Length: 350
Image: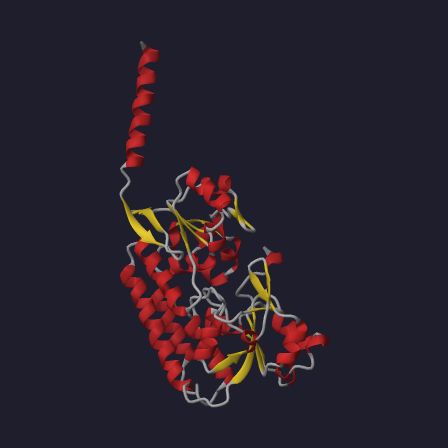
């Protein structure tokens, strides 16, 4: 009789668990690839397997729900300072593959992934097997990026906060466009993404923000090599483009370009106009940066100082980080962000 009671109790408990799972209330979210996904209305644990989704989650005040991340998210010093709990988050993505066992340690209610994962049947089969909803983050323009902020806002029921960020960004971007709209001769610039020769193609979000800031992004004028999802220029192409200004967003690349003999014939090197873009919550101006208006302000003040003389970037930073991340930035923090050095941990230092 005791054995029978135990068996019946186990069956009852399993049945209750099944009912509980089946009765989870969901709502439909359309992701960046146009997929309709049923996501729990109440989300308590999330996997940010694409860095910008973690930045957006922090922006919306939901950062403590992050239980899994891509390793790059843990390299952002300001982000880690804001959310020390990220240090305990698992890192289930290795290259272009998800380690499902690592992901299941915390089994998030929903995960955010890059398009390469969402379009890979072998990868999505792992997630489908364990009924883990996944939303693809995909965008090639500022407007499309803002749609991703809206999408994640719906996941957390934080649409009002998402719209406040979008409104602020558009106001700043529009004001910068007004400053640069009458420029007749645009300055030619080159942008290095992580590595010196990795750059941005035509039609990218980076081309858009440079264009709105009154500059020509030279890498959009030529064919680039496409390797493992990234675009690269040859050194010969860069020498031929001969940009007047170079912006980089990885610590040390600016010094490499300025000192390596192969780059010395460039006008930007001769005039010492090779600049490290600042690093805040994310790397300003990076294709996946939430701080695009600030990249525009920074680049504008470097390239067109007279046009941007009245732009008070430091006051804007204080307002932005307090309003959207509840961070009081001191003058010292502002200097550290603008300098960029030490604000992002190198891969070989983790």
